[in-house]
Length: 181
Image (cartoon, rainbow, N blue to C red):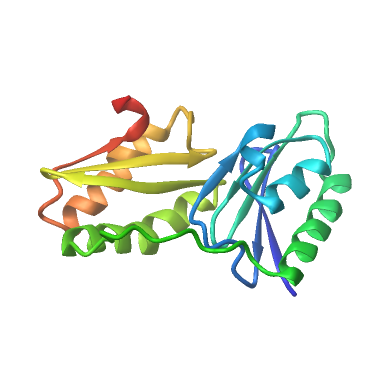
């Protein structure tokens, strides 16, 4: 088993990319003990100690450590937890909705997000999750280190919106789910 480790511009965040799928549950962020109950892997990594948050996708685990913790001590422990978890098998898939995403525009939006946009933001420990498409407005949720980042809106408007609008004429605007609430 091979796990690629990628440092990010934030010294407290490191991304782990195993060579096999981590989860079939989509994207999830874990920031407290209550949220950990949803993922045995998140619980195992938090038990290592000195972890502030985790962001898990199907192919990446982004770990944010406490300021005073040392990666030299944490990395081997985190790697061991990931390897143990993957040797048993990834987390089960959640039940699929009965409606599904059959709309061609939504499929095109998701394809662009997954192929062009998410890989770029994952390099910095973040992700973007599709939420909705209604009347030309795409609603997404900024996750991981993108959530709360001072450059998140710039990424959303100058990056995500520009790409989606140039490839998909039906897209008129992209909004962050956080700003809508």
